Image 1 (tube, rainbow, N blue to C red):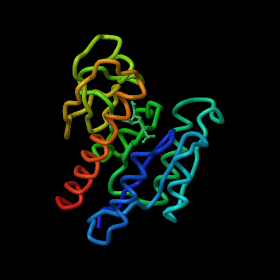
Image 2: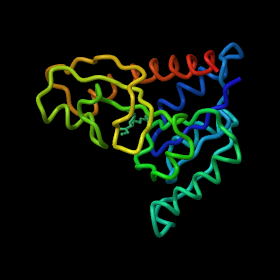
Image 3: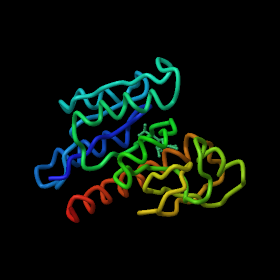
Amino acid sequence: MLSVAVLISGGGSNLRALLEAASDPGFPARIVAVGADRECGGLRHAERFGIPSFTVPYPRFATRDQWGDELAAQLDVWQPDLIVLSGLMRLLPTGLVARYAPRIINTHPAYLPEFPGPHGVRDALAAGATQTGASIIVVDEGVDSGPIIAQERVPVLPGDDEHTLHERIKPVERRLLIDVVRRYATAS
Ligand code: GAR
C-alpha cells in the first residue's frame, strides 16, 4: 500500500477529493498525513477524515532552508512513499526536493509548460488564451518545470473570470491526481 503525504496552503478541495478516493478500501494508496505552511481550511478535511496533520508556518523561520528542514522532519515521521503538493503555494527549498525527488508531485491549474508559477489561472486569462488546462508534474528544483505526468486541456469560456475558470479546472485536476496516485500505487 502506497503511503502518501499531502501538502496544502488553502481550502484543500483537491485534497478532499483525494481523501474521499482513498477512503475506498479498494484504493491502493492511503493518506498518512496532511501538512500545511499556514493555518488553512484544508486542514479541516484532514480532521474530518481522521488523518493526522501538521503545520510548519513559513514566517516562523529565518530562511527557506530552515523552514524546509522542519518540513522534512515532519514528513519523515510518516515515511511517505509519495508527497503530493496539492495547492502548496510555496516553493520548496532545493535540499528538500533533493531529499525526496522524484517522489514529490505537484498539481498545477494550467497546461504546463504554459503559465507556470503561482497565478496559472490569472495568467492564462491575461494572455487571452482560449484554452488552458490542468497538469500533474514531478517536482524538480525549478518553478513548475519538472516532467509532466498527466495533463488535460480545459477551455476558457467567454465571460470567464479567475474564479469560474479555476472552478472548471479543479475537477479535472482531481480526476488526474487520483488517477496518477493510483498509477504510482499499482506500479510500486
Ligand atoms: C489547485 O488548483 C492547485 O493546482 C493550485 O492551487 C489550487 C488548490 O486548490 N496550485 C497552484 O497553483 C500551485 N502553483 P484547493 O486548495 O481547492 O485544492
